[in-house]
Length: 376
Ligand code: PMP
Image 1 (tube, protein in one colour):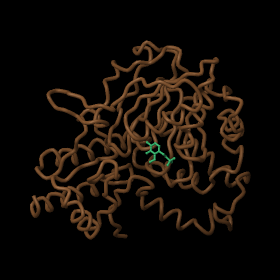
Image 2 (tube, protein in one colour):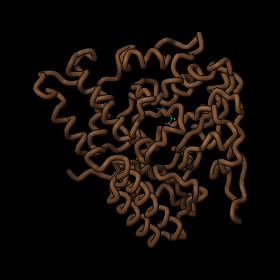
Image 3 (tube, protein in one colour):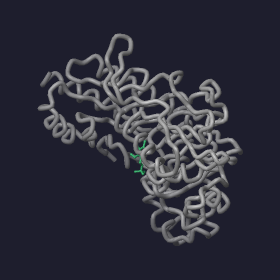
């Protein structure tokens, strides 16, 4: 099947093999006579689907036994409230610190303010002069050594990949080196989960919506270190208390059964591709090719500090805004979809998640080169 290349930021492209398998199993899952959508979440059959999804996810990311893997709902937006509701009251601390790297981190920070004393550990709000270049607001991130974390904060929150801005924090900081060894790190990995290994020894909690690298929208993945459970604020809705969700093995209420099934098919596909190590290498190759071409051209530009460039979301501007509409019309016609940048950044954005093969990125680069020859 010849499909166009879909560069959407999320929901985003899924592996064709996964869609075809889901289509083949849609009306009759493994001879059961029912669709996965029609099964009780408490049935043996669905239990096998859920358990396989969790086991495969644990294998892919080498999740240690000290962590619960939870399938939740409400997206990362709900986690913006669920995290403080569960963690900020730990040990009566009532305070948390946030790294402001862009749009999504700012949203998390704003929501957390409803639950306690919330402070900024580092921010990219202003411009920065780095190696003789000036980087504008949200196009860089202070070096980890400059983050200020209160040693009695209940947690430090960061967004590992800013989907809109195209800024990635590749390495999880060592909290001891930041003078806050007891502060658990919380990472929103909505848009880069499963694209690189995760060092769980540095983390207390990781969460992310599935709809970029892990499946369709509707299920939120949460990896919660077990000592983070059981500290929810009294006002926390019971369905959002990680302790309740963990105890019920993500069936405190009806889970998003079909989204979990689809994510499970993506996990099996990832294992067949060589797992997260293969995705890590592929992400490096794809993003280097695209940034390399952008940097070599006179028509396109990426404004993010090179050490912070996202491997998943590549925003780029054309030298003249007047060319944007022509670029978008021509890319759509050429089978290169959803390249329009977020309105807050302008220009274009190519999201190149796990399910986007190198071939798709090469097709985009070929198109961009040809467009430059005609309009540059
Ligand atoms: N964080 C990040 C990094 C995101 O990319 C998104 C969605 N694009 C969100 C949070 C919000 O996720 P959701 O819409 O699933 O609530």
